[in-house]
Image (cartoon, rainbow, N blue to C red; front, side, top):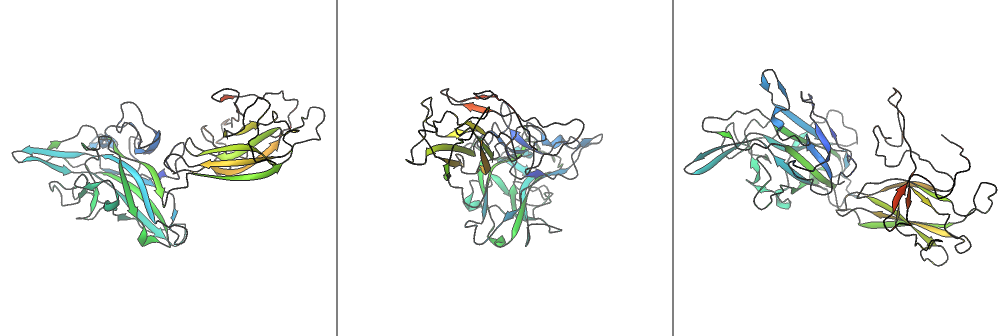
Length: 410
């Protein structure tokens, strides 16, 4: 997933919660934030979006407290047959608290906070009390390098290492520390790989952890960086990339010829039930069943690449096209990380939803079910049609022809 308009099955499990209420958050980055943008697209996960100093996220009257922030991945099935590449890939940005001291021999650093990934496994997709353990980054197949955003854990107050108070990583193992921003990578986004070969045949779950350890500067040391946004991830992939495109075709759809008063003949409306994102795009081509060529409607528009939920087909001349096919096209986006999910369609005069569509509303339906929270909560369903008579299709909340009557079904 590229996290565009979707959480990707991830959720925050920070426990205990921080006094500031900050959590791992999903959303867009822009403006004067650090990082300035996500690795791709507009949305990603981070430890408090737009929070430029995570160190004060759990403070009380006695000052700052040490804490961990944790993000949980969905369950991954490392099937030995279906998964050809038992690996996880993601993009990572981090900028953590660092202490420094300058002397005649140059600067000395202490990486007092850390970030790392943990894994747990099970023979079933449900996890009971299975513990999480630290998993090393496959540094040979990542863009990170040792001693540049990725450091060895030492003892307390060791120089040029991660402080031994990094609780989730054993001494002499490695974790993220300092910053991923370098002269050669001013944006700070790195590509990271985790090797899951040891877990083939099992189900696994990953936990992304950032630690603030409340380590005070020692004599001669001071805080090196004023900007400490924490850890951000984007473009999570398990296994190989998706195919760039694919399609499926539904054959020989016939027009209605038994209309009558207030019931039009012809193909009517095509309503699609699908989950999409800005990068996981589902489009449809209307094809002549007899010739295999694209249908051209009465306005001279070739009906190709139609995007959206509702499509008006009554401008198709059913005498010219007595039978049509629907070719549904799936596109996984520029990074080949997300796919549309197609549930079905209806053709004729019915317009509605099975709650398996993508909604941009608060308390939107989940897993095909919409549940009210009470207190007068409502579901706002507004059918929208894309008008392809414009050079760039424009949405409109009405049909080209009047509605004579409505019969509701729930």
